[in-house]
Length: 138
Image (spheres, rainbow, N blue to C red):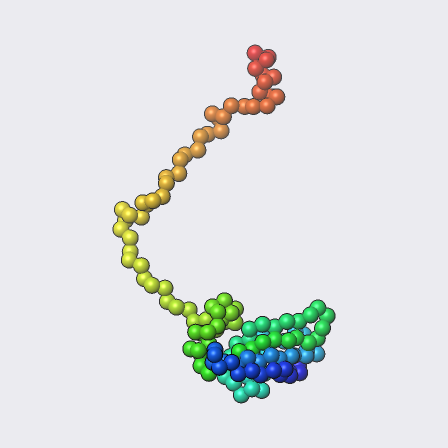
């Protein structure tokens, strides 16, 4: 795997570095985790506060291009990056759900309709040509 950095831009407004990179693979496609580790080694950045936003690879090519964001802290990354990107990268911290008060036994069924019992098939009238022929024979 060969890794080259195409551009390294400091974005002061969002307090991050935006790195565009190219990866050339000689065998199987390299995983995001491997790319992140190698990029962080090359840039002297922490893998915990870095995230690969996207990777593009054309069909049949051995090279991929991508975009990586490097933040000064994990908190800055969580504040700035969209939740779906953090979740996709496995960096979203799960918040504990708030506990809801227990419902009383009498309140459990409120707001729900009771299911009506179905009529047995014997009560249904037969339709179609078979039913008409039997009536004509009688």
